[in-house]
Length: 266
Image (cartoon, rainbow, N blue to C red; front, side, top):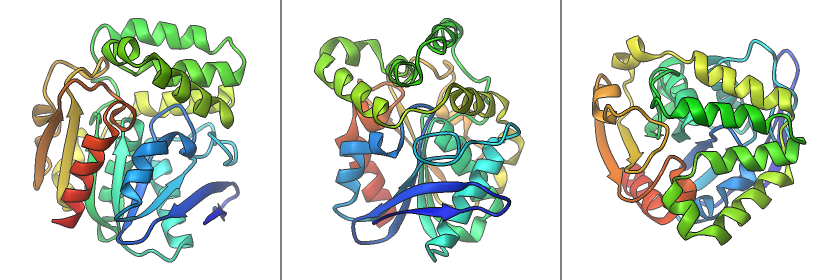
């Protein structure tokens, strides 16, 4: 099922619901529309009712307000669940999506059953020093046409190992990203929201059982472990996926989906 959820104050979210089982909301990182979940979502749909959507400013959703934050994005996600008549759902967020999912768990605690934070930082500036150079590369990407900027962006967060060993998969990922490219304004809005994110002092308020997942080869996250970064979450467990980078849904869809399904089934 696909559709459009109208938001209070204007704007809308494009969404898709597939599969049967417990409700599981997927919240995307910067780059790529909901079609970019691809195999990862297909694996989850075997045992869950998977809800995917395009955040405002991306894919087939309306433009994002200039004052967009990870917290306002969480409010949009809650509005989507309300539109679908879903009071309570499991939530999986990746990178920027994990930041959004964090606020969803904080601001709508009764609506989040189990929370999965993948490649997620509690503050937007918790990145490796080398990520500055990646940021410059992203800036150069934004002078390209939107479709090419989007394709470049999703490639930048893949580990070098994955890009070298799976060139055909990189091409597939880029083609998916080109299908519904965000505008330059949309990409910049998402990047700015991620950079401004700061929920560090609020983590202790999360009451949902939480799974924190990181990739061993993540090129973006700080050298400090997820256990240290997100250790204030009261009921959290930590998993590391070997030989995988930042976008675990692309580099390790089977391993990541297995962890998620086992966690929400526990």
